[in-house]
Image (cartoon, rainbow, N blue to C red; front, side, top):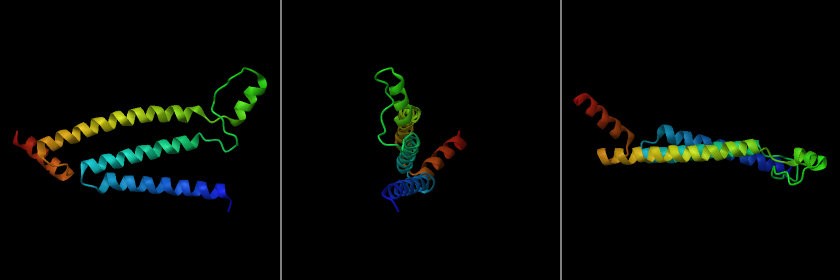
Length: 134
């Protein structure tokens, strides 16, 4: 087995394990803070998958910047440049996930202030009793 195949197999196994662990944390953990951490890990794993999709296996992989307009440079860039679209999508995804994480963290802080717990069952029970009592 070549070194490249082993490296990519290891990366794919790590991504798969990371995805499974983060989904487990989102579904089965009761603490809202742990759920938020697992959600952050899942979004970072998805961003890494998008980065790897745009990676070129041809060496040398160069950034998609055209320094001089000529047919030779354009052909070289077409053959060796990495895809800039996944990079742009990841930058957008990072900004959106940061905003979503801040909003969820604010909700967790407010739930803790009201209920005194970050346990999902306690928070749901408290708010469902509050709705029935009104």
